[in-house]
Structures are given as structure tokens and as C-alpha cells.
Image 1 (cartoon, helix red, strand yellow):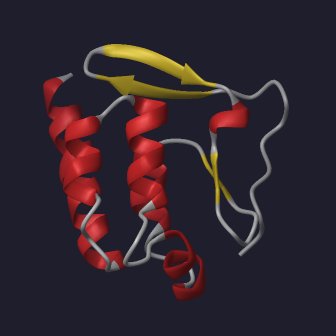
Image 2 (cartoon, one colour; image 1 turned 90 degrees about the vertical axis):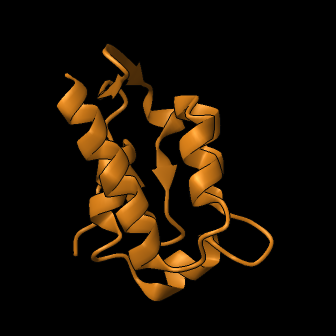
Image 3 (cartoon, rainbow, N blue to C red; image 1 turned 180 degrees about the vertical axis):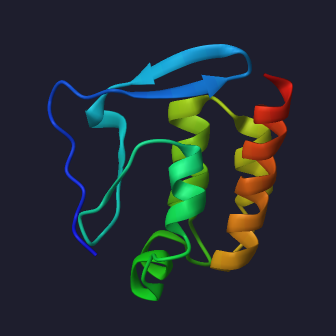
Length: 107
């Protein structure tokens, strides 16, 4: 899979409840392998193809970088708290996709 690189002027538009929020490229999540993730939905879909080594680098018994990113960048503490204890890709993906679908239904 080709690495995705963000241009300096590119912003990701994400939904925060019913408000559009743009995050600057410097707040994108960068996987250990160098792939950029721009929003929660993209993270959910990326878990299908993310290498086990990337996932296990960012999610360990003592940390969950994805949970921290969601809390710090998107200000979603409830979602971050749900994700924090999860140590498996598929289980993480299910939590994230449920969140994405719930937010799309509210729009």
C-alpha cells in the first residue's frame, strides 16, 4: 500500500456532533510506518489494512496512542475511554465504526 502524505495546505474535515471541525496536518496521526490518518473514520477503516506491527507499536499494555489522539485532537473523551483498554485491532475497529455510524445517523 502506498504511503499517504498530506500536503501542507490540506485539512481534514471531520464532524464533531453537528459542527464541522478542520484539523491541520500537524495533528494527523502518523503510524510508525509513516502512513497519515486524518480522522476517526479513516482510522476505523485503516485498521483493516494496518500491519500488526504498526498496531502493536501504538497499542500496548501500557498505552493506546489512538485513544490519546481521539481524546486530545477530537475532544472525544467518552470514545477515548471506550477505546483505551482495547488491545485488539478488530475490537478497536468495531468501537470506532459504531461511533462513526452513530454520528452519521445524527446528521
